[in-house]
Image 1 (tube, helix red, strand yellow):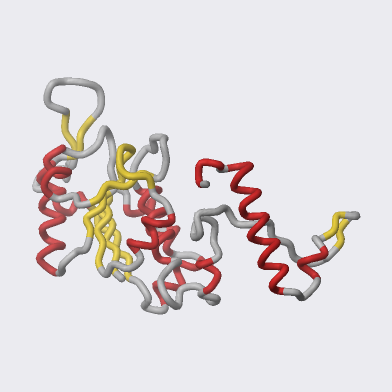
Image 2: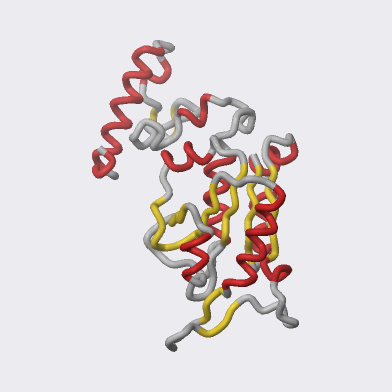
Length: 223
């Protein structure tokens, strides 16, 4: 998989891909992540990528020309399955969406900034808009990192135990059940006996029941 992230702040995005699971996935050649500086595609001598909005109003708007130049340059080199824009009014990122995107080969993620992008980019270039929550960030970089992380961890070979991703919260429409590790007793707080029983049928049953219980208590809307 290849993910090309278009941003005005590439330095802000480097860290998430230089550590832990994402770093190992890239090192193994399981995915490629490129941080593309939008200013490199500006024809302005000052490398500007924003301007005042037509009609007046507070805030700046990302200009159409640098974005169009950048996307078209990338599309000349390969075919992209999706051109994603990180937007507060996009579809809410969930596990189903991440699962679907993990099956793609080439993705572009355009990070929003300022008051947003020229609407003509959304009309003619963007194929999918994604929001990571009902709140506003200073820019789309953190959202792009979240989207990428949720996708890359699902790729075959990324996790040492591939069944782990299948047991994550939301994969079956439920929150994950409680988990415990050693010691079996700490300050009088004990691990449930069923988890120490070795009876995997009963353990699976307990986990499923607890997942339903936790989902009912904390996110009933999922049910």
